[in-house]
Image 1: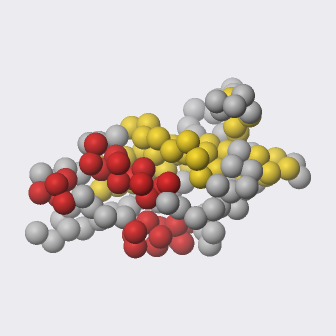
Image 2 (image 1 turned 30 degrees about the vertical axis):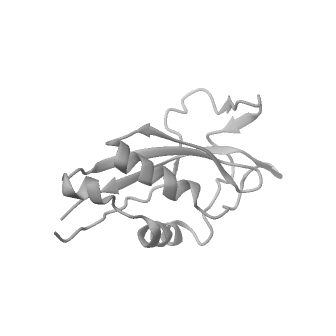
Length: 133
């Protein structure tokens, strides 16, 4: 069976920012969900799409069972651009969810988000679509 992997790359700030623009992380530090200059994957979204396409592996068991869908992974880009607190906020199946988390955790450092002149933590949600042909 030929496998086709579609990846929707649209790193967006956490949805639902009607009133609150920050939340607290476990260390009681502010994590922004909207800032003046959002974090950026090195080279932009096109480079992120290429990275994910080249490194993501469709799990064999999921392909054999025809499991498909969109996994939403949230993560924090730190003041240094490091990825942390990776978690699935809306999953499809454990096999796809784990692969989506793995690829996000392995991402290189980003350019950090900025609020004023200061780098800050920013929370993102990245939807990743798994689709078989």
